[in-house]
Image 1 (cartoon, rainbow, N blue to C red):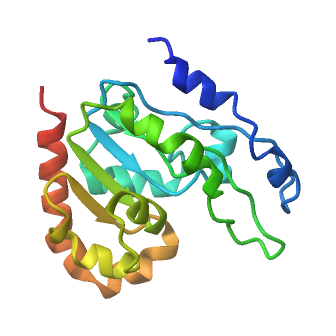
Image 2: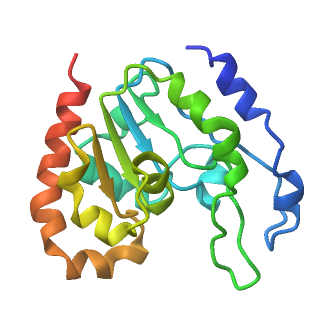
Length: 197
């Protein structure tokens, strides 16, 4: 299936070339674009990490393995662009700062592309909002990830906020067993219904 004109436009984007060249990683932009207009499930995250930047495929790391388990999706279904749109708040790896920490997604990316991408996905049935940047944009909340996830029922059946599935959140997951016991069964059921024909 051919890419849409919008996807090709995003792939060609170089708005942040100077910003990325000035980071500790001094890398070139490489937008990772993963959506098609017929998608039913939106996975909205933060920004690609270095491994995703290198692979050119979203969640191509251990966090992707954990996220797929949370969603109850196999790898083939997860990467089926006709059904699943994986749209981070920034399409490129933002780089690392001098201490090796991930830089946040540049706001210019969401300002430039987000509304257009969302308008190009009219068939979405469920939005899975991974992390604070996506939750703030989609829900308008500034409560913080832990509180937003704790209040997951308040966001209706069309959106479920999640913590990032990174290994860095393993401690949080252990301290909050309700997440696995209460949220994940509902998440899997909503994903299953969203993916039904």
